[in-house]
Length: 147
Image (cartoon, rainbow, N blue to C red):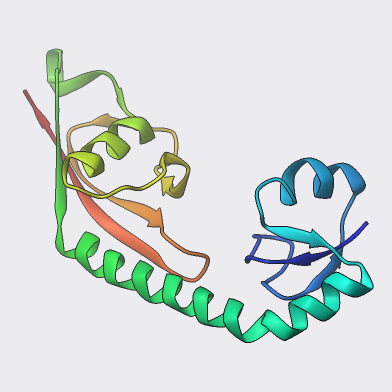
């Protein structure tokens, strides 16, 4: 199935490209999430006429993500956790915990955009990557301290 991408899709292409995908991926994932349209002659002609509008929207989203990234990089998070002997954590600090800390600070960021690795199991200062846009990634400082 050929589709026109309405948004940048990682490992597939950028907005405006016509790409070949498997039928199920297009029908069940891309089209319901408004990330693509079926590439019929009519849709291609319509999309070409609205291309500048889509590019302007994508540019606005990127600029908004850059503003949020600058705020995030200037800010830091503090996770207070319970520790046992030798300052070892009970459990770990996970992506969900980081998402909740960001929400407390007023940021609405999906937890899937946060890249932490396997989780944090020791006290200390960590750099956490937050992918805000396909082209914009912010690094926020996370302090893990005992309660």
